[in-house]
Amino acid sequence: MSDRPDAGTPQRSSSAGSRTGLSRARILSAGMELLDREGLDAFSMRRLAQELDVGTMTVYGYFRGKDELLDGIVDEGSQVILRLIAEAEPQGSWRERMRQLMLGIRRSHIEHPAIVELRYKRPLLSPGALDVTEAGVRILRDAGLDDRTATTMYRMLFVYTFGYSAFGPGAGSAGERDQALAALRTLPPDRYPVLAGAAEEAADSMADRSLYELGLDAMLDGLEDRLDRADDPAPKTEP
Image (tube, rainbow, N blue to C red; front, side):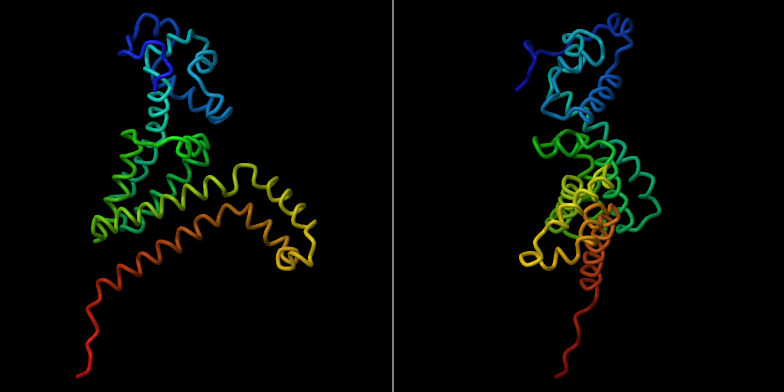
């Protein structure tokens, strides 16, 4: 549902845009910054207009409503990921290309945590989001997987990446590590003997950003092994 009083086709005013220096690109950039800073719940067309120092209806001249604007923000982030894939695709194996794609998605989540919140609270079926999915499934189809297996495996890799972005260490991981360690050190050892004895190690793992790549490589290793076994001829049986 649109949050605009009149959800008809936006009527852009070039004269108004030239006076304010406004453009779709500028609105999308400001929208992403606002989302990253204040979160999705605080985001509105009125709040964005205040950020841009223009009237709310001026923003509606470029986007019909908040949903269209949010889709545009996701598409902008998706294009960055796709550029990384385009650079890696010509010379890389399917494994290298898929790794590059997942790292690009992960990097996008780190730089713009609002994307994670958007993905969590609303379906992302905009062209840009679907372009990334298309690229991922195509890589796995090129590896020799059928449609069902390729889409399933891509989903597994994406959900792992998204889940790590949502629940893994963020930008303030050093502070998170100290907080976790302080909490773990208060655990009664009679109830939590393992965690109490491994408080330092557990706190380190909660703040270790490199663990994402460790898990990603383990998943890709398993998929690569599955493909290798599928390529091997059936073992001969003795009569």
